[in-house]
Image (tube, rainbow, N blue to C red; front, side, top):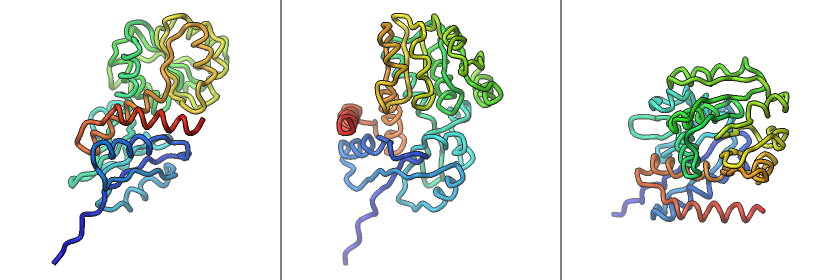
Length: 282
């Protein structure tokens, strides 16, 4: 009598839009490097209204999901358990399934903090562009780096309530400036910042490319396609240190792999796969 092999394990990234995502290249490379031959990682177009139904329809072979916009806040309502880190931030990007149910985590914080630390960011005033779920993670990452004050640039201050709540839970302060509609006023707040993290969608921050960037400022732009962004190119021309959203993507994915597999994410193999995927698109 023979028995059938156990079913393969599955994971995926969800979001809307999602076709651009490089996460499958990262995670599948990790599975290969770890010898997890029966594991597979895909991508699915899922919006906020569809998340609960998608999760409810998953079988026991599923180990986890990566969540990108616009799902980073709503996933907290879908998960059975919210990790302390995700609860403090008010957003998550990783849903892990175990026999005990689902738990949501936030590895964006790790991705942001590790990327900035490697670029030499630390002391000094920081500026965040945007107030969405990634901005909430950026706030936590900058708090971990112990920067000297955090300014947040938004278009509409009335939509920054979730970010302000994150700041309160972390015991820090986020000074919100509704100036993104005024490039001159926004550039004034940017002037002299030691660290800048842009969480804005592609193209939205282009008007700040000509701001008075200073040599030594570290800019992390969460956008990685197209690259370089106008913002990154403008800051680089002025001597700023640029951190691509690809580095943030890599570091948060390394942490996700460990959460989903229980084994350290193989960073060298994942970095090689990411570089190959980017090259193939260029």
